[in-house]
Length: 343
Length: 230
Image (tube, rainbow over all chains, first blue to last red; front, top):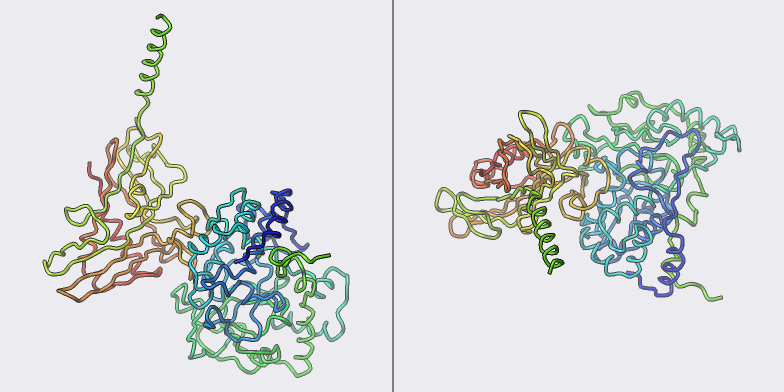
């Protein structure tokens, strides 16, 4: 929990002065319309600020040790680097690698198995999961309502200092929806602001031939659920989408992840079993395990020479968006949490 | 003196006007076990006269309250979402502004929350996810929550936990209840739980905590236990 009187004063007199600063969501040109319904949660600077504070504050966990950012680090494209499956409170481990967070306004469902149907509701899952934050929503609200720091931020955002479940979730959703990555080299090429090298261009052609039907441009996912031929890990027995639909036809299907910022979002797959992009490419050329629910697009093995794999990798690296990854507006809000530097 | 007389007359007029304004009608929800009004954390003897049951939690959503006259809707409650909690007596009383004076012959309501609301993001008030009536491991409201335990013989105890929900095909759990109903100042809506908890179903399925065929089956059984005490 954060109690910094000086910071509180800054928030009170700074943000309150510009209360209800509505902001609009800027859709990159040529992108589809976002799925998120902004009319039910109109954007404002104050709500995004509150959401950002909550995202980085371990107050959301039972022992105040784990924040959203613990498993969604900006420098790892908002996923959990260095661990195959993410770990939470008390070093508990789950069964999946946390998905990267970006361009969430276009997602139609959330989590690897699509368990969550709306971005607003996503934060409930990690907050209440015993292996993630180990909290319960009502107790989080008690902690927030006992904090003058948060009472002021809630007032700035919603005109009411009382934290409610609705406002807690809407604020976190506002921060998450602001995480737009649309300025990679790929994007610049599409805007005629840059050019692919010959190698990247060849990689793009291979991508279009082999990958684009699931990792569909410009978001690099079709947001559907597919079985991509991974043998099941018997230590997790994770059957993916079937857990939610109870339909055997959904066995071993997982949500297609975006490839944007793939350079930084390692390890890969729902259980983080591959540490490098090369391992991923080798899986698609020689590691596919056939089963009744395997994606029809993978029935025929992908044939790529070593040089072609390098070219494809070169293209995938053009999806890195350093402006997004190192955007101070998305980073730890030290201006809120840390004492102001003395001049 | 005249001023006092006029003042008294105006008071009488006001009183007359107030008295003419109809009082809002209510639905008073009354869970029962057999012939007794249900109380939490109280033992109730089952029909076999040896086992008993204790209920710790009874919470459920009633939504979409409507009254019909000869098949035509004459009253539709706005923003009709009510979280009924036996631990909170005030939640058992639903006040229906604007219903008094209308003629009707049927009450309908839903046990649970509709699918559109389930997919519309964070809601407030009775629908706030912090009420504990929203799943966190997957999206969706818990329409009906019943928790307690059986005592079988002297010591044996079996816990039961029913969290009934689900909004998506083919396991949508919302149930519509239709009851014949006459105009009344205070409708007593009975929810009888004795049949439900003595049925073989509950012995076979002591825990239902996720959407599915069993949850739908039990939701239908719960919905069938509502009646109006006229």
